[in-house]
Every structure is written in structure tokens, then in C-alpha cells.
Length: 222
Length: 386
Image (cartoon, rainbow over all chains, first blue to last red; front, top):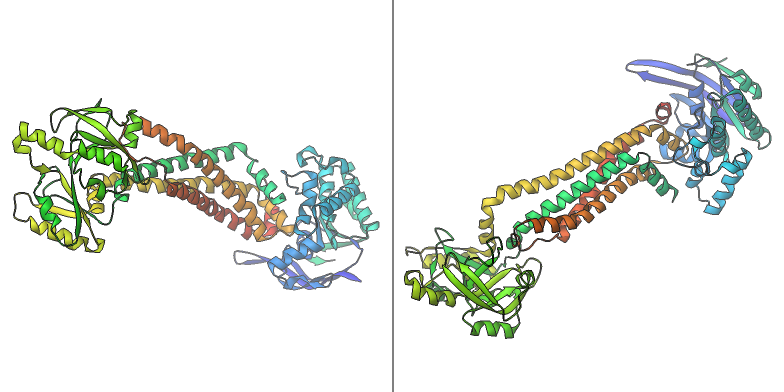
């Protein structure tokens, strides 16, 4: 069963009066529980495709259905709520709030839920345990290594039990060892916790971990 | 709670910047409070004016006296309730720097037309029975540690010679707008001495205070009074007490207007200071706001974060500024010659204006950064470096 269904989707940007086509009439499905790797040269549209699937950008045309919801028809505030419920984000540069501790960073998405403080604590501690950072929850991002920061970011991505996890070059800013740990963690999330993962990467070793790898070139799937 | 914590932590990211902004706001609020207090002090006489009192003075200038005989003629006009009079005495008490109003007044009616000067019946009676008696305001009594029965020697200048007055009463002001620093004594005391020493100056008073039944008739009664004395050697000009007081202010009105304008220009300056701080802060956090939006935080949340931070800085600055305003006003007052401003208080309305302005500035300063944070697309925000 497809958790993500993309049909005839195109995306263009306008620079002054010039139209720049980033994605061109793309159609494909992502099955539930999939670990999909998206590869391609710079400017091929990988991150744009990821952003569209995650609902942080809108296509110029076509449809994107995620977990039964046609997200292209949602308004801005509905889309924000939808993202909070269904999507976990992992960025290349972690994007943690520098003024919040690891615990507080992971708790951020839960502040939008109706969970009690106690329930939030349980979820946050569970997520930090999964990424192996339960002993660093009071540390600020600047007190953590790059790999640890990315693990906190992954904990933040999974804390609300999202439908899909989107990761934009999650190992792009890490050394080999840390990158290996992050990929192992991603594999575990997919294998053990059955999370659907869509990952953009340049790294062939990262792509090896994915079940399926799709290549993008000049806005088209090859 | 977490949002409040985030606001708090965001404020402390650049401690020096936030501290300087808070201090800037505090200085501005203090200056605003001080300027407004000075302006209010100048206008305190106008504020205390009663609608049912008319002032009749010489048509040429306030410094020219009016014949005492006018009192009975004014009393006979329809609509007039009571007539009292007063006379500027001047003089020096202790030192020229020790300034307060010293007036020879109509002992019979003065305290009736000025019910805001609260005096016990016993003391008033004692005053009326003693030709050289005087009544002083409680501020004068406190300032010079005077009590009933004490003698106040005054060196005359307009009315030369040594004058001694026995304190027969101490009045209290009814409210904050009433001058608590007058020295009032019987006009008859001056008049009797003038008759002996300068008979040509006797028989005159400074101005008349007419209490009327209905304030609506003030214009008509004023006209009748002035018509009564037209084509006489001492023509009159009658106006409401408020207009009379405002006439006094005319000479300094340009300065007061400038001070008034300045007090609001200061508000504009703090808006720019805070606005600048907020714009810098939000520009630095463009990426973080994009992340928050990615996580599902709404415009309202961003408003809470940015507006909350801006309001917090503004209100902390305002609180600090107001806390500094009280000692600043005390210091300013003590630096002035004593009695320069009989009423020099930080008015509640000034406090409210300062707080309200700071709140408004906090909100306004957040608008542009907020608009920027909201309108920046997530994908553009995530690309932001630094």
C-alpha cells in the first residue's frame, strides 16, 4: 500500500520573468514502511521533491497524497497542523534550537499536541533512549558533537510518531563514524519501528542502506 | 511555559544588546516621565480651576490694581453668588530663594470661594479675628517646620517694611491639583498700614474672584462685569479662572509645547531602538523560525515568540524607567528653588501613558520582524546561513 502517491507533479520557480523548471511531470508511489533513497546531482530537484512530500513547499501542478490526504489542497495553517502530525524532519545541519537543551529540543513538536507534561516527558525520554542520548538530555547543542546533535534531531523527528520521516542529507555534515551511526539509527527506525523514510543523499554508503534508490536528473526520475 | 522559556532564552542570547536596549527604553521612559511631570506641574493651576469662578483683573495688565469699591458693584450683578479678592504681596521670607505665593486676601469670603483649601472652622475663626493672622498651606508648614501660633516675619518689597504674621491656621489641599504652598493673610492688615504710610496706594486690590451660580452664564456675567466698569479709570477684564490661568501660561506655552512634543518624540526614539533590536534578532533567527514552521508552529506561535520578546523587553525597560523616574523627579524638584513648582507629582496618567506607550512600542516594534518571519517561505528560511 502506498503511503505517498505523487501524480503528474511539476514544480517551477520564477526568477524575474524566467521560469526555472525544477521538477517535471513526476509520478511515483512510496509504499508504507519503505526506506527510499533519492540521489542525483546538485540542482536535480532532490531537496525540492523532499520538501514537496513533506508539505513545506507546494507544487506548480499535480497532486501529492500522503496517508490518504491530498496535501496540495490544504491551506497554510492546515498544512502546518498536518506536518506536525505526519512528518518528522531530519536536516543536514541538524537545525536544533541553540538556546534549548536536547530534552527541550525533542519536546518542541509535542508542545503542539494535547499531551500532558508527564506524557511529553515519557515520549521525549523514550525518543532520546532510542537514539542513545538519554544521558545527555540536559545538554545544549553546543555541548554535543555533530553526530550527537543529529541524533537529537532524529529524536525530535520521531517523538511525535510521524507517518513519514524525511531526511535531507542527514550524514552530509558528519564524519565517517558519526555518519555510520546515523545510518544505523535510520535503518533501525525503518526496520524495528517500521517508519517510512525518504532520504536525500549524495553519499553512496547512505544510499546502500535504503531499500530503494531513485535517481533524479534535471527534474525527472530516471 | 516552554514558549515563555523560549522567549526568555531568546532575550538572553545577546545579553549586551538586550541590556542596552532595556537601558535605552528605561532612560527614555524616565525622560518621558520627567518631561510630562514638568509640563503637568506648569499646568497644575489650570487643572485646579473651577468652572464657577470668574477672575476680574485690570484690563491693561494684571499688575495694575482695581479699586476696592468694585467688590460691592460686582456682588449686585444677577447670577453672582459671592465675591472675594486677593492681592499679590510678594516679599521675602528668610531668603529670596524661598519662594511661595504670599497673598493678602478677603478674610470673609476667600475660603468660601476656594472650598478646595480645607481649613478647620476654629482656625478660620481665629484667622478672621486676628488682623495680622495668616493661614499657610501644609507644604509651607512642613518645609519650615511651622505650627499654629508661630510668627512669620516677611520683608516687604512691593509693600516695603517689616511685616509680621501670626500663623492662625494650616490648610490642607483637597486634592493633588490644589496648591498646598500659599501664605494667605488679611488684606485689611496691608490696607490699614497703607492708609498710614502711603495713603495714595490704599483702597486697591489685585483681582476679584467671583463665584457664580451657573457656569453656563460665565460669558454673560463676565461681559456684565466689564461693561460695569467700561470708560472708568480702571477698566476690567473678566474671564473664567481657567482662561485666566491659561493666560499666565501664554508666555511659556512655546516651551511647554516643545517639551510636550519632545516627550512623544522620545517614544518614537525608543520605538526605533527596540525595532532595531527586534529586526536584528529575528534576522539572525530566520532559519530557526523556518524550522519551527516546519515542525508545525503557526503564525500565532511566531507572534507569541516575537511579540512576546518585544513586549517583554519594552515592559522591563518601562518598569526600570518608572522605578528610576520617582527618585529622578525627587532629585529634580530638590535641585529647583524651593516652591518653584508647588505641585510636582508623578501623575497616575503619566504612569499609565508611559506604560501604555511602552506596551504600544513593544507591539509596534514586533510588527516588521513578525511580518518578515511569517512571510519568509520555509524553504527560503531553511537556506538562510547564520
